[in-house]
Length: 327
Image 1 (cartoon, rainbow, N blue to C red):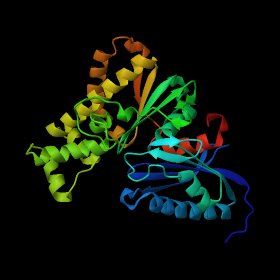
Image 2 (cartoon, rainbow, N blue to C red; image 1 turned 90 degrees about the vertical axis):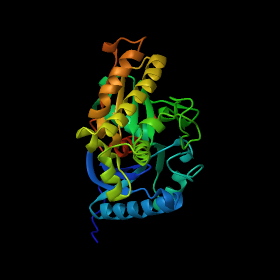
Image 3 (spheres, rainbow, N blue to C red; image 1 turned 180 degrees about the vertical axis):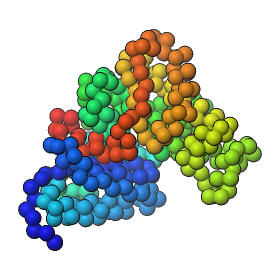
Image 4 (cartoon, rainbow, N blue to C red; image 1 turned 135 degrees about the horizontal axis):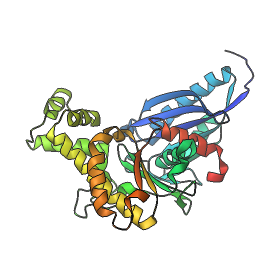
């Protein structure tokens, strides 16, 4: 093993979602990404097992980095759910079953023996949008469409929080009062209408009910569907797939209109894996939004897709962890 004395102090950013974990090594002074890694979130294994596997991966990465002359100074973690920022614990996380009250910061400090700061995952995405070139967005809402639907408000260049916990949970805004029951326990949440998890669930349900669709071959051939199958089917003109993306767009528009008319924000940024279906939901979204933004002039407001890509949340976690003024 190399005995090179560490010269560069780096920060690790981690994004823990309901399906995937993304990791980046960043030199915050230069803005360089030194390394990046993906893991699967095996949610059925429980919090301790997932964090144990994550800790092992991070420890190995830190050891290799040290041999290359890189010392890790702090770990920033974005995690799905409502986060107690001061304690670094997960209060509620519908898409990570069994994580309620989980002391994530404490567990990672025990494994890695370095400072750890924990944030909401979409707060990290939103802050990355602002920090890495999105300051022209003004005050904005960031929506992440993934396994669930997460939200973050960036106001005055800072992540909006309340009473020391994360906020902005637009995914659990009620859109259909008598709708399906969400994993959070409420009915008709935006998440039940506009997330990748529910898009797949709804498509499989429609196929079992006998709806005609090319997706039937994907379901029978693979045993289950993925959001990317539905995106491909929509691109090829499949009626069911296009109907489901229309529901995503109109549901997002209702939620966005409520937030915009309440707060008067200037922009919405849409991120997350389901943002890859942008071409199939943005038309219905804009049409519905134009009908509902009765108190805001369309030229004063915009909806844009993130340009930061797959590692946005991990990057945001890295930068938040190093900038104490944002804590």
